Length: 290
Image (cartoon, rainbow, N blue to C red; front, top):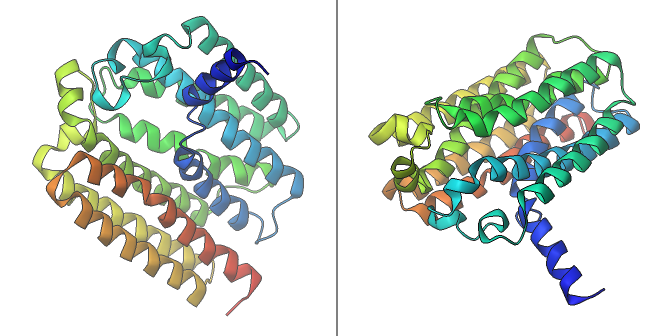
């Protein structure tokens, strides 16, 4: 492979954020929560494979769509000024083609599942496209992102042929609250630049109330997850996972106390371990009942 080809692949990988997989994990944890709770801890192998592939494909396509929408703004933000669409390493046409290819593969995979899941997947695509546009006019686009990132919950229940019982709605709500909390941390890192260029975010909307609001969202997500555990008769494993998640949330509050952009990004990234702790609790409840 020539050096030119390697450089092109590297640029495509950076456009799709493959070098920063935390977004994949943040999308994957609620998916895993739902796959386990909707199947009694025994997810169907085919369904599991489709959802794991779909998580990677849709997150990657979502990054490309986001950068396409933001390419005229990213060059004015310190953190994003070296993105491939800004530097010219990738053209808008190439980005559209990449999105199309990833979308076709994802839809081909989901087409092997039942009809209800396929329709929910179509709605997921609409949410993915709407989020970058919402940042132009909607004061709290993180709410839309929260719905998009937790849409895997109803999809997982549908794929397993299950309705949406109370625990499923609670799980969806918890994932939504958690996503808004961590993406507000992310937005805090870009607040000054976003305000200057006219991009909306909950960090701008909340102003000096950002930290208290994040704390409330984190607490509400944990309480909602505790209700999921109660409804599903989970025990000490799940409780332990929530305790770990609560400790991590407290640590994040400490990190963002000065609103330093780098510290806010570290707090955001550490949410990967929050999702992991919750999933570990769910998985252990089914694997080694206490």
